[in-house]
Image (cartoon, rainbow, N blue to C red):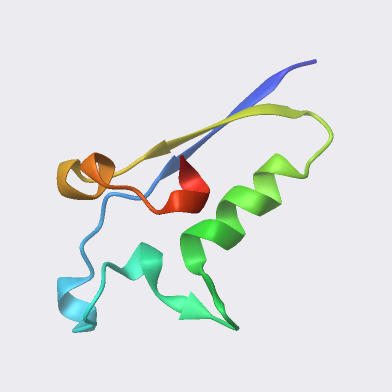
Length: 66
């Protein structure tokens, strides 16, 4: 069975008041989004991971996501 994981990472985090979008906030040296992608990518049944980002972030995604 093939499974595609879709991560909706479109928030800006405005209410959070952080300097970066909330999906890029770091916890323990890695961003929340990076941890989410890794969790799905390491699952044996997940064959693809799709990340939906806001347009401005999608135009210049983090290097590890390319």
